[in-house]
Length: 583
Picture (tube, helix red, strand yellow):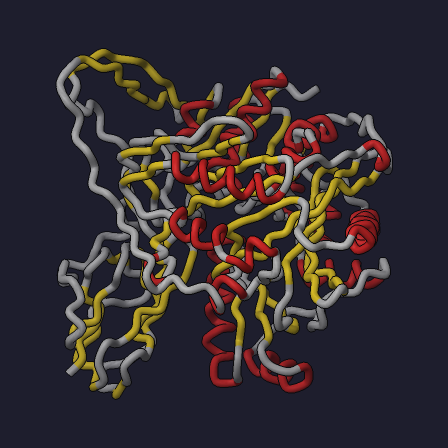
């Protein structure tokens, strides 16, 4: 059995892995950036080491820093979680080449399936048809146009080395191809460290259904069941459930067998997910995620299996102790992602800040996987997932009602969250009847009357309280406890700061809808789309702002001529900062 596992990740997935390791008697090591110095996963781990830096590239995507920590702490295994390096072949090889166990598939399987292009080829060779697309990286936006003219608009540009909807852009016409291609490349590079993208057909009304697989090194490969992840916005999932509603058992069996074929085709070992698009009783291979999925808890609740435990056991060389026929699925599970986003008016705009309050739900059949607690700060530099709320019920309707009850018990202040939007989804007739698709949230649901806001931080009262104070000795985090008067915050906690000094001429002026173009949130300017002297129309993009790994277009609120531009690519800005002036 493994003795010490380093978790090369952060947030709720790091917390999730730490908890199972603790139950198995495995020591845990956390790594953290400057902004995550007091994060929940750092507080829970047995040991914690600083990586330095603020952005993902400076910390969680810094291979040299992570390898250095492995050497210093003596970890015999590394769990990558999801995102970051979880599907990076070079990182996996850098771990295994040092005699350290990588808790995931062999690097060769990641190489085939982590690259979405080669995974399509492997699936086709295994007899599993994919969505029509080009099996090579895009070199120019003109290739997108040529593909669409052959297969029809719209088409999807997707990151070749990632998943979760990051780096995916839907293109509806030739005029949008160039900008969409550039944006997809930027997001792919930012989140996965590689910019390669490919193009495929975009189906008209599909459901996103994925199959969980589990494989050991002895050649046993099983499918555990499906998850329906069709409730999405920006091609990223909001709500997942298992089993899928209105899903014929014959299709379920065929999809499960297809998933096993795909896994075996690349010599897969450990937990993985094969994703499909389902439409009109047909399913198409989409991609294989060579890692643990965000939504894995719904499978755990209906099967009774701890997938993280099995990841660790398989990585240690154990064989599966059950067969395909012995897998049973009971009841229904639903998960909602609690993201730091403001869904007001259907915009789902990133919302950053400190959680001044976090009341967590409980009761029968309720589980919360959180990466933050009250007092923690949600930064612009990382994914905006605060927590996952998961419920189990004897059937789908009772699970749905239980989820609504659990959401009512959840209170988060300090940032806006997607919980209000989740209620709209869960109570809509289409969701109740199970007839929604991946396009349904954005094209059908009406969020125009939805309004939510982040509550202010509440100050503490008098008294004496315990404060955990952290220090670093040779880069290793050490915690000591002090009893101090309440209201004295002690050493300052890490908060979100700009990667570069803010330009002095940035004014903290709120947009008035007149001649000043302001940004609605803190972030980094990744592109300036206009020039001084250029004539622009209302709604035309002025700058593109990246916040929480998502790109947001900031548009002109009036027509005119660009008088001045006050930012350049790479500048860090705050909410209300003026980026351009129009006359």
